[in-house]
Image (tube, rainbow, N blue to C red):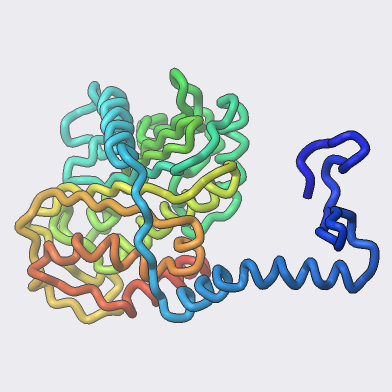
Length: 323
């Protein structure tokens, strides 16, 4: 298809094929159009077959990492964390909004994204990604209550649900999120562990549920992929996830649906996980992407090897909203 006019030769945005002469003309017959389309399909055949093979086999090809992307994302996460620490600085030391028993944070960067022109446009794109809610307390949630609703801060959009607005409101660390988004396609969120707020089930700070990292990070990554769909030029999604407060915790099954005996303990307090899948890999091979990303976390618990079935089953539940 021609990109521009050439007077008396070709017209802009028209399709031309080579003919004997030699000369270039638009297709005139059904046979000429069929021949052109056949060539287009054949030219993309190998790429299509390779994508099909990757989906069927579960193969996740390595992605060429963009120089400095990981460092840029790490710096963004550190800046967002400092902002959250500013917000909670005046709260009591054991306040739930300060996540006294530990927290997990996720940061994403859309590699190659053309920045949103304004914060208003960024807000619109976030709302598009927020239309799908996979859990009851979704990641990057958009609350209607004015005290918790997203707002502009400097050149970011952020929201802090940890602000106490009712004297008698009982909060848990898992419901005191802080998140931030930037115009160039970076996201950050931090939240406490839901396991620390389950009375008569698990003592606060004692355990991590086997399935919850899959749900937490999976939901965040799916949000990032929907967010990526609102940008032009996105090549891949850089990820940095950090889990803190792990030392002396054990793996458990809070709902009792999986056989865990409390004998898998972590001697490490903090672990940081990084990855950079393409948007297509997130959409087609999420199970494989998540297994590669989260396995180092599970290994901290006395070399626990999380099975493929764990990721596959829980992600299917997540995508189906079966929480």
